[in-house]
Length: 535
Image (cartoon, rainbow, N blue to C red; front, side, top):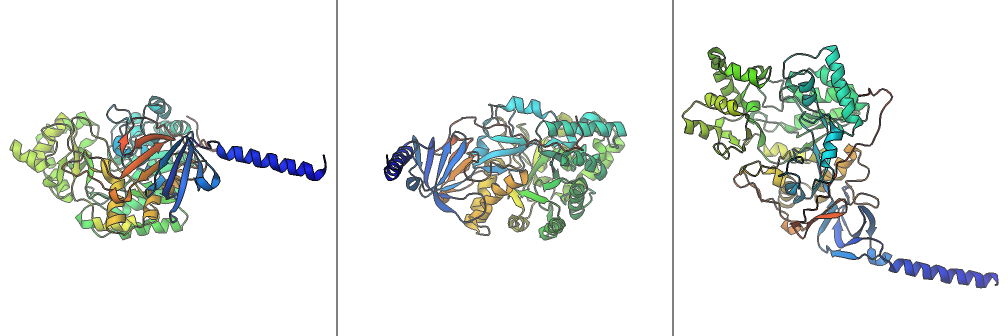
């Protein structure tokens, strides 16, 4: 065969091979015609997205590329985004009522962070083994300083001994070796409140040796009783990160209390100054004006909790101590707007949906006595209404380092009233700040929920719509995006979320839950520094 004939034959074979290849299915699923926001913050583009197995295998013009798939879903006119990452959640993934994570999925959330506020178990491998194949969303975990301190020292107000500190370091190292993303603290809460800054730095150094994060519910957001103050609390968290080498995220960054309305720029300035020094500092937010925590945290001074629950109850029986508590409980409530600003989100029917003031009036007891009676039966979940200033929240939402969270805990079946943020936080941010008020662009807001979080977490294969990434994908009808949950009627799923894929499987399809339980635990990418202590 001559060279020219050989070349012609080779070209013909190549064309035939190429034609056959282009006519074969190249993906398991194609989402066609959507407006793709890729997580980078750049302007969206009309593109098709192909999914093969659990990965994104194509982004572009499927028709022009000759791509086909056995399943093609028309998303023309809809927004296609990476699945949202909830940077601070109280997802109840170990409980039957919370495993499906439907309140999160209906907002487009596909990954949640747990173990926050210092409460994360150091037994991460055991936790993840119990979650594998049984959860509706992906999850990453922190190890909790409070949980470690409780195991080693108890709920006492003292520093650890050298041996105890070594045990605490070893528990952090164990958790990091088992896949934790970092150390979380709840320095507002007992027992974290009893720790010095130096103690936390020592433990954060262990996490930092694994390229870990310092995630903090800092000591004083502005409404702490006899606290260090809003700005000093921010300074402390930044110092912990700077001294330890850990990157820092403020769990739900905002200023609390009427005395701090309008002061968000002051706190933001401290973060900007730290970032300018090279400290990797970021934050997350929800856009509600109410918090949710516990009755004890909001009404009992920390000295009265020293030693744990039984010691606290013993103090409740001492007349002299009770007289002091009568005064200090009211002082604590004054910071939070009074007893009518605490709304119970507790499962107990005699409390749920009522304010502390209303319960006290119904029982014909003074408010401090009502608090002690409730706590004697057990701590209670409460919301603190109007603690956040919406102008502060608007200002912080515009910062390039601000991510998004729910801070939400799915309610138990007997809990009618709970914080609506678990059902609507992400959707509310899009509805209010993007679509209604237009203080954020859609690409910027979506980045705060996707790529920005993935970058901070060092998640190389999530948070973006790009070839090779895990197929965590959300599809929205822009015109229908709306949070429906209210303080009076919180159990209402968000609207406008059309489809959600978790690891390539539909968790929400045409607005309905599939109950696929396609989520999985996410282990931090293994990295053990030479100076990282072993468990």
